[in-house]
Length: 482
Length: 96
Figure (cartoon, rainbow over the protein chains, first blue to last red):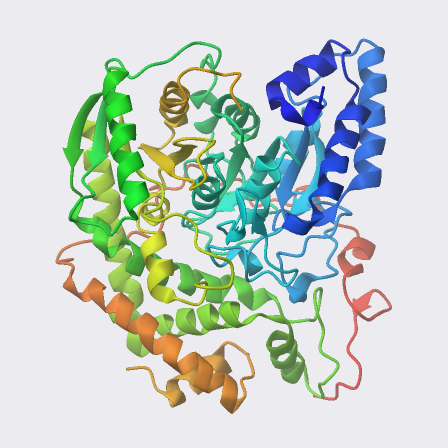
């Protein structure tokens, strides 16, 4: 039996029952990573340490000690999550050789539950982008079709999970960066409520919207890792104690349906440009929810048309500020051409930051200029409230909202990543969720379909339980299905 | 509309050197970006307060005390810098 072919839950159970060792689990995944190198899902593979850790876990189990809920499960992390002693590059030349001296809180939580960190996944440089093509370490390919983009910016994470190089992975989602590549790779991706998971040790892109997200091959697996990470952390002032209660009593082994669930379905026809196949699958998905007992009503959201512009202004403004720390002095790339400190900063940034990152920094600085602030930055903050209020109003009437995750299926590698219109359009259903700080899940419509389409369910702040129930119901309650 | 001069100004403020060629490449994209966000002007935001943080207010502030467990050793702090001396970050040839 190929043990990479089963769910994370089953890997954990088989490990506890001593049907498979942690070392065997790590080796089986390492073998897939070697075979599928050309997909370029990983920047760094943590082979030696992971094997060492697996050995320790095998011994711990043999000694009869109590094991954590992630025991034996290999997990990969997007390479903007700090790992002590393992380089963390953010997909940038700037941090090509940077080795953090500390762990992100999420790393500590995974290790405390006996999970095994096995690799660091590829991403758009500094998580800025939506195709995983702007990485300094090259583009990631989609395992569904190697000519297509993986989506992004957490493309390495979704590709690793889809191609069974890893059963579970963490990404980050600032405007859709977990849900969109999950949709493009036919896997499950969750963007939790802002403040549900600690951001300590996660390299900031746009800090009022960044959230760590979880990727798995089914909803049950994904919820297992999510539950482990939803903890208050005193090292992140925006982390919330409330998150610890949300999934406490959720039983993921039950069969769920949509009976009694009010579902607000976004009216897409006429309002948004959808690929034909996305429109067709979304319609079928709505019918499925109805047949599972959902009380479906069509909704329109007026403010959504402003969401991509609002996101672009606010995220670039925050990017310009967050990326100011990269100056070549204390860590990261240092230019050799300088005679003054300022020249060191300027040349290091010029030489080590990529084109798209520079463009966003410049745009963010432009909207923050004194003479422009009112027209762009402050205006966008007000529009952000309109968007958040409209979601809030909708979610007071409905348990969950339902939209396609993206309006299009993935495009071919190297064809569109520079096209701002396509980038804008591709984020339309996801960015609003980050602007409002609420939570959402992307579930594949049909995991075997050649053209991947994801269905997004959105819930209010700290209502991840509703997302998981909706996701499980949508998967048909078939928890063994991968 | 964003001009070459604006680009030079923001590049200077962001401490990024750009060649004339870079500026030319950036200009078209930045002009396009500005055009795309102009739609915000159509939103009626009269009387609307800006939303800076999605959770209002912040849940709690911790005491402003040093948490000893989270302090890095000097050696760890310096591990990623290119040059160091006497436990400090070091730059060569700096006389300013």
